[in-house]
Length: 213
Image (cartoon, rainbow, N blue to C red; front, top):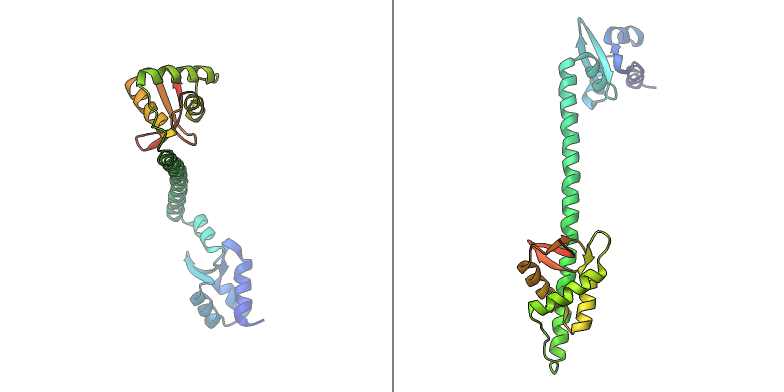
């Protein structure tokens, strides 16, 4: 074992209390060259405590400062608190990004379905596009909503679309156009909620659930 390795081992075993430089010199002899190399490599730190110099291994130096220097402990605690706050904020940002990604995915699915529906209308040019007056649509919509309502009142718009479009011969995009017009005219009668695989866009978010107020 080299003189440098012996010195490093002694300093390491001293822990956060550190090894007094004078005691190391008494035990190991001339240590200046080996100590200077270890300090240069960042393996050992030398600090003056009182009237004596102590050597600390890199694994124990921070703990020695926490034990002996109140200002350092305060600064360290503030940095740790800031780090925890940043980590917490990062998690909130990640959740917001995930939610945005889900909404974009739902929007892309809706656009695709509308594009496929439009293509179907163009191919079946002999069949004219079916539409309804909002008052007539409201009767069919309310009937499907009431028959499908859960215990808390919320119903997925996709289920109502299936019932109403099958009964009235409406295309999906026409159904959602009428839903947007209906809920806009009767805001005191209906409440929309985000979620679902399809629905109407409100303030940039896909709303796929509805209930009567």
